Image 1 (cartoon, rainbow, N blue to C red):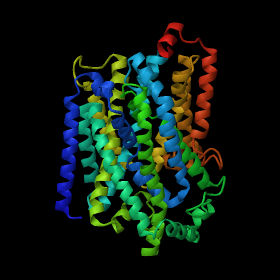
Image 2: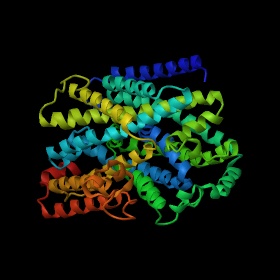
Image 3: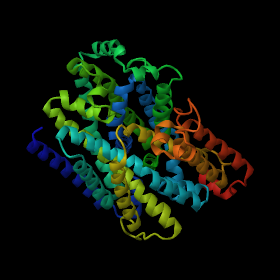
Image 4: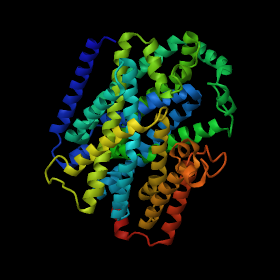
Length: 527
């Protein structure tokens, strides 16, 4: 790409983002404005912000690369993203989260759980878990954006990483959630346009829909031997049932991310920003269409990169990328798209990275400032200010941790780290959240026990049972002389499959054995 042209385009793009962030800053007059965009955001902006927060560089770069490796089986994740991530999340969870947050006057997921169960412990520990574990997810968003800039612009990876971190950190610190959501909406439009052109361009490059799919099916024999032995049956077929690859795709990628979306704190807060339930219902159509083209495109383009690369280089996509699946999509885009599209897709990837990063940093900051320090009485919330100094400090710490992890984490980590974060959130938060919204008999001690059990079992599974994480961690090997404590299939079963049922069971049993909330409190929450 022409560096001068690209510089002008990026500066114009950043100028628009800065203007939107400034508008959000000027409209941020109270703490509620900073935390929840004043609870009067447009349903269109909310839907776009939700979608762009949900779909980041981890989906486009990481999951696109995983789709190139494993095939069209990942399309099932797109189905769950829309069915659970939009239809169920907006119509059933979102409406109740919005109402309960208004009744209890709370502005974060940890504070909502804490107020519903009348427990500061829940607020603090939930906020702490977000602040501790979310940087791992934030870091892979940084990696995804930086990897594309590295490939498409021949930019140094370290430089790209720092540029993304600084840009997002600045306007999250100043403008709060209004600035985040306004810029999210603008980023969403660019992402939507970019992915439509990518989908059309990809099918054109492989000879059309029918020709491309037939060619990919015929390439079954080119699947590497190691993948074939692990259950890979070709890029247009599901893996062998019960095989290692089947467990990886179904339990970790499809179910881990597909279910985990319901308990994401950075997404739950979006439901609190609209005025009423009607706005949430209006958002469903926009959110569904947006996710269909965003995630659907990624999971269709990924496998088809094998056709393009084989016809032009004689190698499948993973070989072209040197074994690092995180580089497949950037290499594919750089190799065949016209120059004008590289400019557009650069903005698409920047938008995907910036929109999600801003939301994650905002949540990390509020978890540190509001949920932890303010709840413990150490906060410095301004009575009429636009933000809390502790919240801003939390944003800065979160950015630093994410950058450090981005240097430490290995290659091909984006999809796995995403599944880790989504799965651990589901196990830790989902039973307590669903109980808070739907079950009056749920108690404080039931919620506490469920959160502890969910996180504990998840972490145990990742450290001692699930080979993809237990091997690199090395803790099981150091303590017991073996990479995992149990044999196959437990080495490939995602911890979500057993941590979530345990968390639900603990929540129900402990709630039934402990004293229920007072009648007056239940009337306040459910009336």
